[in-house]
Image 1 (cartoon, helix red, strand yellow):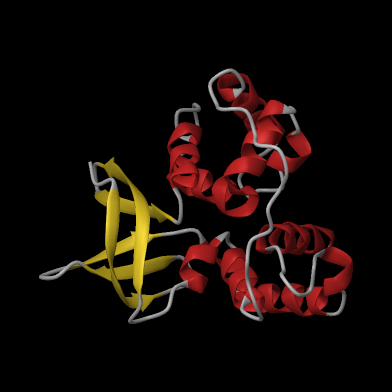
Image 2: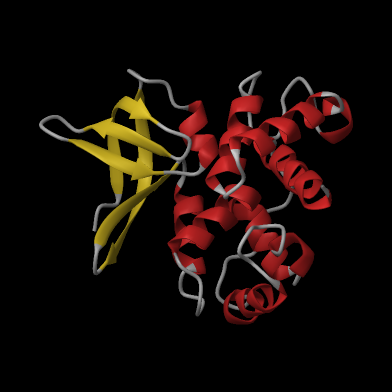
Length: 201
């Protein structure tokens, strides 16, 4: 098992980073926010989980151990694979995901593409007594004007087209103050609001 990857970013995409480990560079699939905030040439330190399938080995990387742990726990639910687990962690974050499960908040869980009501019920049923309780409070995700890139990357990685993502981001820009703190935008909140606007369109 590869628990952690540290090295300089040599390339990045909407949902992955290529990290230089010396003689090799490793491609790590990440939440869109992690990829968006990484800078080519700068070092990253990622908590990782290796998912092995018959036809592929995929390394998933997260900014902190809690996200990585939740990613792994969600996959213990029957019918939930790494793609949907990554979507849950990307859209809700580790603590909001724990909070939704603890409160049996199916509406929050079904905001994530690929999760229907039955899937949300199964997540609650199978994880409610296994996960750590959510922490008190809700710290905002630090960001700057890069929120546009992060939200757009999150939407495209979840299956929306670049055009649809652009429309949603433009819609958010006009009412940023209504949705979050414009000085320190919470990317998770913005991503959820963008998903709601796309669902209404």
